[in-house]
Length: 463
Ligand code: 4AD
Ligand code: MG
Image 1 (tube, protein in one colour):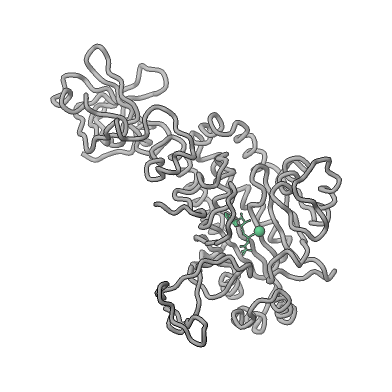
Image 2 (tube, rainbow, N blue to C red):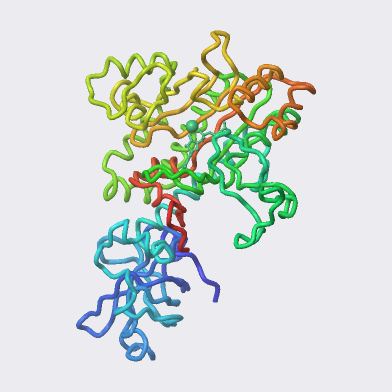
């Protein structure tokens, strides 16, 4: 018999018909009358399915009474309307097959709630909890919505390389990729001889697909990447990962305003999409993880973002009657505490902050006429702070070259990037949205490590 996913059984009109389901036992209760209730969850929806197992079943004594929390089972039975509260339908089993028991003395996910930090140590089992099942489903919905949003707007999905020789952010926070023997590095003139390395030169895991995306935007007009990026920054915060997924749209013939419009439309689309499609999961997060979540998602999906310049942001922060840990002066980068004050207190809504000082931003951002600032934009949201960073790109060859030199970057690495400005250059703009931060925001999960299946952070890569 063909198996049906529980989410389909729960909304089916097959009352009175035979169904087959499979999944993992979440609870078992035995009735005095000599039968058992199993709650089975297969991850297809937040809700599981209640199964009533009659004591007359052949293997009731031998198998069903041994079934424990975490065991994997398949059930065939009749779908009936449930008399009990909490579920509309249930299955009256005619057969229960046990694939695998889970020893209750060893299986860690018993009825007692386990803290999120502890669950990170058993990241291979945490998807079987309510919370991490829901995070996985919301993350999936956000990924689907991302493709939907860009595809519907004529953006082409582009696969940029993960191994690269150039530092896209120029910040020097890259993981090196090598096949050289660490115990016996080849040397020439006292230096490591990279001609013997796999690619004949030093290579790294990319921090961003932007530079490569620009090459395709200047040929195909509109592209977006959606892939993993890597940063070897030693940031032990609740919003940093060493490996995180980023979406990077890039548009030709576009300026900073077009870029802000796109970012705002995209973020609002994402949240509206999950409000419409992840009702049960979001209700769970709103009840158990973050009480204001639904209201916040609705307000962001439904209202315009505020747009201010960096200079205005600094003024607002200097006026603020708050003891910040880091002082704010024009020219310093905004810290997480500043970002959060601006979006949570000063404006009380998502903010797009533009035109940052050139000195604190990446080399590729377009220089404004004031000689001090660049056409940068960051999107800040309550609770998380920065979720998007982007800019209009410097399309003028000489200005870009000057910027690369001024930042002390090796210009020979960027010859192809400079070439784009020699052959048919055009104004263009794009941004990167940190997918983990969006999942964090969308679920209300406090720590980004709980917004990705297997977090990579300093001293932690077990799974
Ligand atoms: O602001 P960032 O560094 O911008 C770029 O990488 C540009 N190349 C993007 C572009 O213009 N195409 O990173 C973009 C976003 C941040 O706003 C943040 O949401 C996220 O990526 N991010 C991180 N998320 C998790 N862990 C980290 N270590 C992150 N670093 C950045
Ligand atoms: Mg940034």
